[in-house]
Length: 328
Ligand SMILES: [Zn+2]
Image (cartoon, rainbow, N blue to C red; front, side):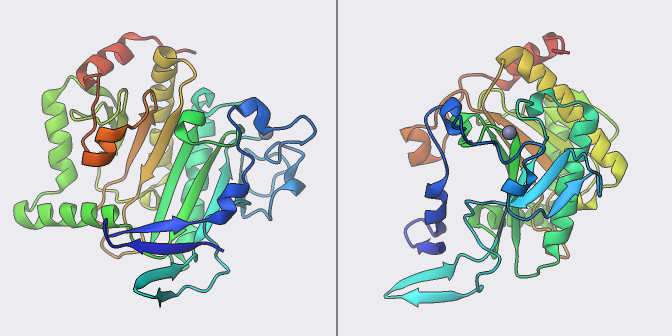
């Protein structure tokens, strides 16, 4: 049973999830899948996962993406959603959702080698799951992320992403949304229009643009080789996308993975899809996606001050990426 405990010092919730400790994690991937244990995410091993929530394409024998509850879940949808007190501490029950998106039926395929159609189906799968999860109004925030590589926190080799839905908006997300809203009220302009204007004015970080998205190395990137994809239109989240938006997103992410792989090889990374507060009628977010290569470990100064030390200026990174020909 997991629970949220409120940390009075940081004013943030901490999720205690003992179930996560049962994950088969080792120091290397090779040990993760022991020789006698078949991979539960492979085609043909569907019976080894918890009950399937979705497969894409629908009702076909051959699937490209499947979504299942996380076996080592941090939150549980069957738990009662309640807040309570213990001594002088505040707690919340571990109510929420924790799902795994199996991105491919093939064990050795990585997202960086997906073609545009495979990426389209991946984003479409996420859209469908978020639309479904949104129906449960007790869920307030939907974190959509991918960890790839041991340095990015992954414990399972087979290509997968996760959705964790919490019964409240995390503090940092609420602060971001308040900031976007405040910008609108003070300037009568959308924060993201101004943000993109500045990045285009700087110019050196811009990597690629299509009808609906711009990809760039942000001027004040926190991580070396950090890349952002931002919607050009005021689309608050992926659930507001039409099919052509999903395809345009897949196209630009495919381009980025080609460039990043060529420069960095098989690199560990976190990918995060920022959708704001999709449960709210007014969601001041603009959809953006971050690819954060994990080339260095976060260390003491970052943990203490929240100030990141980045050794690669984004203008240099953009130059390196643009000069590299696609891997394929
Ligand atoms: Zn596998």
